[in-house]
Length: 528
Image (tube, rainbow, N blue to C red):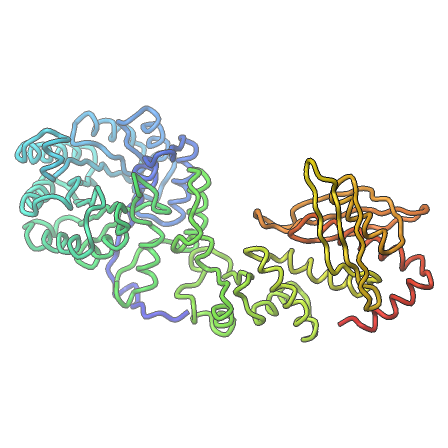
C-alpha cells in the first residue's frame, strides 16, 4: 500500500510509554497476578514499546514482586516504577527496579489547586518543595527520572510552568503533563503543551510526555494534539484499558502515526505486526472483551459486509481500507457474508472454498444464501457448504420438502403438517406424535407411504452464535436396510424433517421401486 509517509530519517521519534501493567491494571476487574504480568511484559517488549511501567512497587507486596520479576527478565525495554513524591515510595521503586538493565523512576504530585487542596492538602510552595526533594532523591538511584504533574490539564498554566521548571532543574529527564481526569479537549491540550515549550526556560533539557484519559472519548485526539505541539512521549495502554473510561489506546496512537505520516511526520519503534497478538493477550488475561467496532483491533476493523464495499474491496483493497490487516498482525481482511452482501463476494467465497460452479448454479445458491441471510446475522463457510451439500442432495431427491408447520406444548398434542413435492406434484398430510419431530416423521410417512425407524438422532450447532444453524444427523432403518440422513436449518424441527427425508429418499432410490424410479427420472429432468 502506498502512503504519504516521509522516510524515518526525516522524522522525529515519539517514545511509547506503556502503562498497561500499572494504570491499565487499575481498571476495576483487571487485576493480574505476577505470572500474567510477566506474560504481558514479554509481549510488550516484542511489540517494541520504549518504556514499560510495570507497576507501583509501594502499593502492595504483589506489585513490588511483579515489578522486580519483570526488571530481572527484560533486557531491551526501559522498566519504570511509579512512586508518589515521597522518599519511602522512591526507595521501594529503586529496590524493585534494581535488577533492571535499564530502569526509570516515575514520581508524581498534583499541580491543580483542586488536588492540592482536597487530595494532597498542600500549598503550592509545599508542592514545589516536594517535587525538588523527590526528583533529587530519585537521581541517587538512576539518571532516568520522570516527573508527572498530576491533573495538569486543570492547573493554572504559570504555576504548572514553575513546577515543570523545578522538576527539570532537580534532574527530571522526562516531564509528564497528564489529563488525569479526561477533562481536556484537543485545542486546549495542544495549546497547553505549546505554552510549556514557550514559557519553561529549561524545557529543552527534558522530553515532554502526555498521559490522557478517555472520560470524554478524547484521549487519543488529545495525545495527537500534544504530539503536534511538541510532546515526544505518549503514555498509553493496550486496548485503551485503565481507570474509569480508560487511557489513550496504544494501537491507535501507533497506527495513526504510521498511517498519516503526511500530517504527523513522526515515527515510533512499534512493531505493528505484534499489535493484534498483544491486544488479544491483554484481553484474554484481563477478561476485558474488545468491542467489535474497536479501532485497529476490533473484530470488525477489517471486515466488510456491504455488497458495495465488498465489490470495491475485491476490485482494489484501498477503496475501503486505509491500512493493511497484515500491518497489525491480522492475516487478511474478511468479507463477512450477510444480507447486505452481493453476488460478487458470494462468488469469491465459493471460489475460496474450492467450488468452481456454473453461473446458473451460483445464481441458484445465491438465492438460497439470501434467504438464509434473512434468518441469521452472519453466514459462515460451514453454512455455505451446507447449502451446496443440500443442493447436491436435492438433485437425488424423489420427495422434496416444500412446507412444514408444527404445533406443540406442555398441554397440546404435538401436530405436524408437511407438504412434499414429487414429480412436480404437491402432496400435503398431517399427523400427531410423541413430540414435534415424531409428528413430522409420521406426516412424512403418510405422504411417502414409507415407514422407517429413526435411530442415532444427533443435533449440533453447525456454526457459532445464537442464530446458528442446527445440523441434524440420523439413521433410518427399514426391513434390515438403513441409510444416513442429514439436514441443516436455523429451525431444528425443519432440520430434523430434512434429515429424515434425506434418508428416506436414499432408501427409496436404493430399493428402486417402479414408482420411485419413475419419480427420480422426472426429478432429474427438472433439476437446475
